[in-house]
Length: 276
Image (spheres, rainbow, N blue to C red):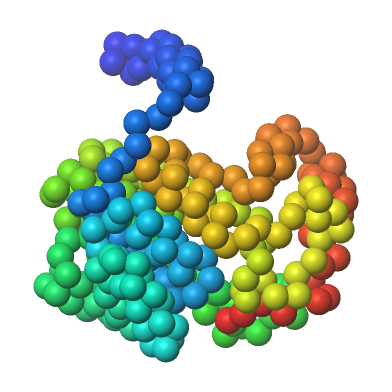
C-alpha cells in the first residue's frame, strides 16, 4: 500500500467522525434556507397528486417560475391555471419521461421558451397493485421505464447546465444521489414516503394505520420543499419509517419479514388497484 492510500485509510474514520458530529450539531441549530425567488422549478408528473401539490407549495414559497411535465394535458392545464391564479408564472409541456428522445427534445424547448431549470423534481411514477408473478411483463417494463430510467433521462437533460451555473437542486432516488457527490453547487434530496392518499394508491390498506398512516399529498409536498430549502439529503415519511430503516440494517431477513407482516404491507395487495 503506497503512502497516499495509507493516508486515506487513516483519515477516513476521522472524516466520518467529523461529518457525524457536524450533522448532529446542525440538527439542533436552525438551518439556513434556500431562497427560491430566483429558481425555475420543473416537476415531472406535475398535473395531479403529489406533483400538483408540490407545484402549489413551491409557488407559495416564492419560486420564480414553475414548469409542469406530464402525460395528460387536461390535468397539466388545470394545474397550470391554478398556479397562475396564485400569482406565479407557470408553464406546462406534455412529456412522457419514459421516452428518452422526448425528454431531451422537451428539455431543449424548456430552455428556449422558459429558461434554465435550477430545481428538478423527479416526481413522475406509476404503480400497479399486483405481485411480481401476477404482473404483466409490459406493465413491469413500463414501471421500470418511468420510475427508474425516466429519472436518468431528466437528470441528464438538466444537470449539465446546473453544473455550468454551479446552481441547482435535484429531488430523486438514492442511486442517482450517490452519482452526484462530485457536483459542486448542486444539492440532492431523496424522498422516501410510505403510501400516500392519492389516486395512485387507491385501495391500499395497512393493518395498523396509526403507526403507518396514509400520507396527505400536501404534507409530502411541504416536507419535500422544506428539504430542498434546507439541503436535507433524505426525507422519510411518516416518522415511523426512521425506525424501520434502522431495523433493516440490524435485523436478519426473517425478522424483517415478520415486521412486514405486522405492518400489513403483504396483506393489503388484494384490494390495492393502483394507477398506471
